[in-house]
Image: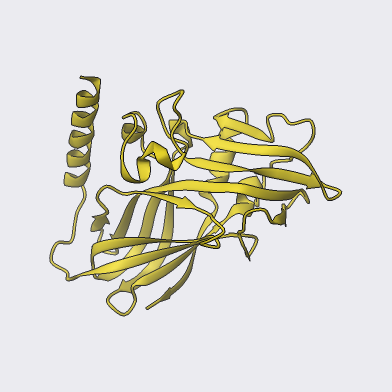
Length: 252
């Protein structure tokens, strides 16, 4: 019964949200490929490779996964295209070298002013139990001990004097960690010859790449180096990963 109530709530929420958004239904459609390139200060992000934070901590990632959800494209005239069932799990692996594509089908062609998406899983779906597709627990992003999803799963080691000194484990997933990102597109034209847009996700920002956001990794491991669900640094980490994203090139 609880599952049925949650599903009914989800359907109502989706209908209300969609009905309140001005949509362009007249333009011809195309497929837009968003190409997310995960990096660290301009270098391709690879697992088990050492990188240096702005505080001169050396870090090595063993896992770097996160959800991108609720993708929207806003035109200059205010109309908005909303991707249905918009949940995507981005995983950095040895095989993909940190580059993960997301394909958006049936997008109206035209000039767009903003790309909008969120990092994490929205509150309705985050409280709806185990689901399918990108939200399937088999993907390793679902807490079995507490209903809900990890929005970001980032794990690894920090290194001093070429020795692994401690682990960092960032598992964010509280609804307050759900972050919405808006990127200005400057009225770029989407059509059949301009249908791949590159985005960058800079993992250096996770440790703070801007004023007031730095996370100092230090022994012994404490609030700075371990956050599960929320924790002392949960809000800071969530704000930091909101800053990871920027636009790259537009091309065929």
